[in-house]
Length: 382
Image (cartoon, rainbow, N blue to C red):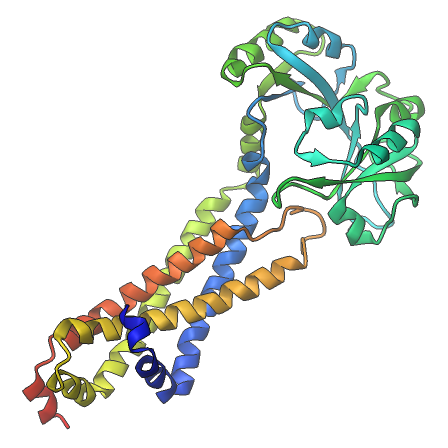
């Protein structure tokens, strides 16, 4: 490729105007840094959608997810044809030392919760210790690192929904099988909650149902809803992916914001880089004429200018994406509201593709002008 064959020449052109080159690449670096962060935020909001199980249903109170359901519903759901397994969970809403220390605390059915969510892994010995301790807790790997906890520590939580001070013994640590999985949750046993709370005894927050065939998800969801129709606590059943998608839509159109910002950034980069390349071609009119005199074809000259524009874009883009990746290594900067704050490889590749297209688009007009440059006319300007 021409960018490798004439690489020394391209570098010489870049360092000729060091300040201008640095500012142009800096523009790409800032733009791609912001682009990568937006992509990370979008992935974080949508991580529940991306990792949702195709064979899982969410069953909640028809009125609202904050309204509980009787724990007795579990056996009735289990008896519905096509249902393979059922578990449940409840949102606890406690506070650890300070309200800023936000993280999800889930009250779970320790008998089968881990079997339902196979994307989470806990060492068998740790899970056995958790099941043997009524006050035991399982915490995510990132949450453990965030607060410097270790297995065996006793952790106090101040109840929000359920008043009082609740203390737990960390008995195990779970990790996700993918980088996108949420490793910031705190799990503890439903029987511990139910024996201590003063209200809503025998109630759970929602059910998670595994079906035997994902193709039958819609019909099984309808059967579950019909099972509890006209009961004091009617239910709504939907796929886990639909539930996660609906939750994200309540927050806002993050992808739309990302596209809008990306469009503005793209055209800004076109103006900045296009202006830089136009000045560069105008300043080197005589040199380009000499190159053509020495036998460089019009297409070769055009390719050289495009390669120079690409070098600006790719170098600046690589710097910006690298900085964004380093920034995301620090974990969630929002204190638990975006637990899966991770810049994935596809997002990084998308960023470099964005830089590539911007580099080509910005250099196209100056490169075309350089290609059409007449040797005699160019030499007269010297």
